[in-house]
Length: 303
Ligand code: ATP
Image 1: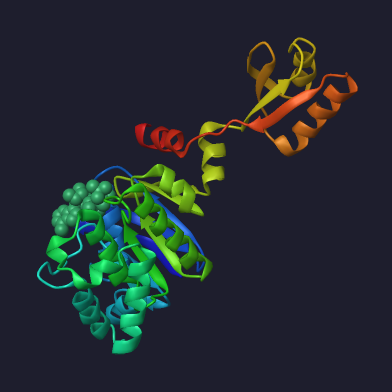
Image 2: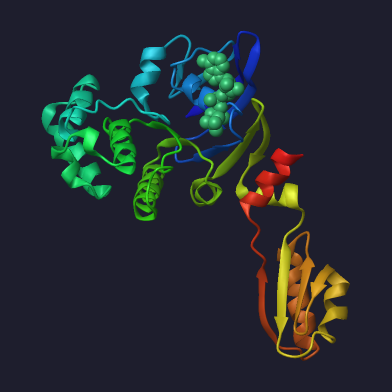
């Protein structure tokens, strides 16, 4: 579990993180979004006990980051934006070196490292020098390093930014399976589609403060208004419009479709469908018009 209260970091009077309060539970993924310089990396560094807060506190896996930084670091798998990789080392040698630092025995370390390399489709990386790796391979190796000791808390800054679509999918699948194993996961990303795929909750940070927090569905409802529904009928829309109007507000229409907003679709939609059936108007389709997290994000950061 990760808990923070009023977590604050000032650099020479400049407030990089200005009082963040949040909770991430085991089995939950929180995505931290925000413009460049918003304070995401600074927050992650405080949670990893690399940077001490100026004010407020953070508790990670039950340890206070200020009082027990060493214990916190043991419980955390950290993927930073610029992981320091030793370019002259071979991949296997590098992972064995970190495995020893984490206190893993050689056999366990080797087995786990190879399993992760296989899973990320780069088994050959074991016997290659890191200096010869591509950008995406380096990012995957850094991720394997972060996961090697099976830490309960995972903090990942842009985990797939350098990866091709297939590798990014392998990594996302791995993150979701770690969530299923009840790891507590915080991901910083600029990839909004990825945030939506992964996150149970989204926190949008702006100038060091959380300006929106909630599930993707909650944020869409709060910031973009009630869900937009699209109804398609087999005939002309003329007969359907007055029936829809009775229950919801029509926003747009075409020859055989209507879009309307419904505060509570679970109540309104069945009533509309029933009225249409009673009037003998066949419904071809009724579905929610997808709304992107990008629209939410832009609404928040541009306001
Ligand atoms: P990005 O999306 O570009 O990675 P970010 O949200 O991770 O941005 P941070 O790296 O946390 O942003 O930076 C937040 C602010 O704090 C920035 O204005 C940055 O210049 C400042 N900052 C970060 N580290 C330091 C430091 N060591 N000394 C002074 N200022 C710093």
